[in-house]
Image (cartoon, rainbow, N blue to C red; front, side):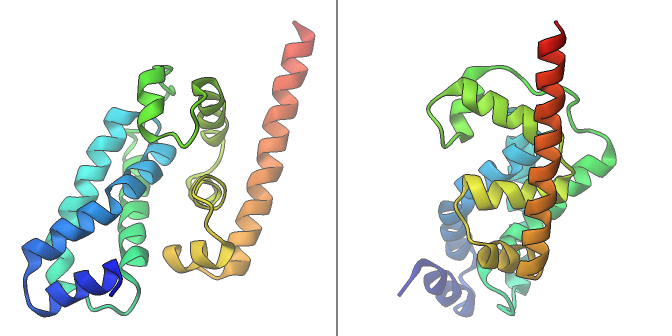
Length: 180
């Protein structure tokens, strides 16, 4: 029995508390990593992550398993991040605290993570989330599409556009660096 089956078994038995404990254990790091990449900074990502799991707790008894648990949680996470951005409460600057970077970073080089974070913040949220899931989490286009409830072709288009935008940003940075 896999972890998601175990969660579903507890949901079927109406043991929502145990199901929620399992969900948090399985998804807390992934949710935090995703929110961190979208909102920039550990304190804000922690707040959004808590909000996501509060929403999951409230909706868990209503989960009908029409999609996978991971898809459902990623949709909640994406919506929470996009709601934060729409509300205008997103921080304008990326914090440069290296200890924060290590909390969510798959890298051990804080300078590389800082550069990646700065570049990601030049992207629209929908491109940023796809790029993060594909490159930083190592998910396939099909898996990203399932999690975000979009066709794999849309994921590929977003990846292409995101790479193009990042190339433009890097080119501008190079031009600014060469002019100084």
